[in-house]
Length: 100
Image (tube, rainbow, N blue to C red; front, side, top):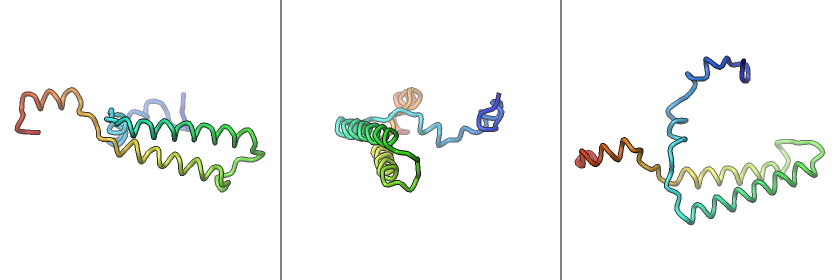
């Protein structure tokens, strides 16, 4: 079976360090969490309204551009939240406090 023309066996090689870092947990403050929640609802609402009313979907449509701006802001807030240390990093810090 292929996904977008790539054999599934080749997908393992496409994982990069950026994807691994992106999947790590982040410490999200209550303020950042609330902002992400509001942005998520806004994105969902605008997308639903646009798809209900649009006759054609176009990347140049102001509504699509508004959703893209909100999504970019959502990512900016999320990636500004610090990464939480992994269990291994916490364990290493416990046994080697000078390496912190």
